[in-house]
Image (cartoon, rainbow, N blue to C red):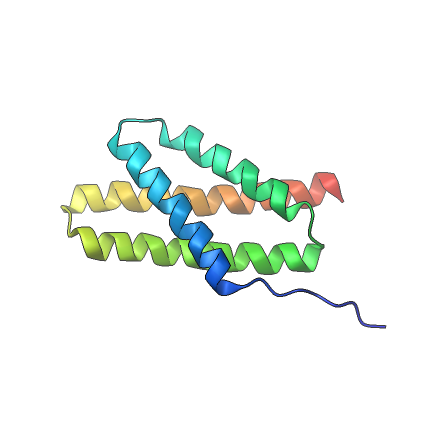
Amino acid sequence: MDQFVRRPDRQAVRALAEKHAAELLEFARAGGNVYQKSLEQGDKVSEFTAKLSDEEAIAFLNMYAEELEACSNKTLDDTKVTQQNAENIGQILGGVIAIVVIVFFLAVVFNK
């Protein structure tokens, strides 16, 4: 019998990605350690995906990465910042995507 796989709700995943991106941007503006903050966010995402099947976790993380990328692009478009600031913001949000992928890989390897 085929196993039922829940599909993540794009609107809910988008809301989470937007929340995380806004938190990182605000944290960066306040001079906080963005790397540490993104690790904390990654831990929360990892805790959530640990409760999902591998297929559900992959679907969620793919959608989450897509939405983080969309947030990054929107931030760059909206702020119309200088080239250097745009690169910094892109690196911050790009780093979050990389961390999510690494956390997922580690969760699958060590928890399953």
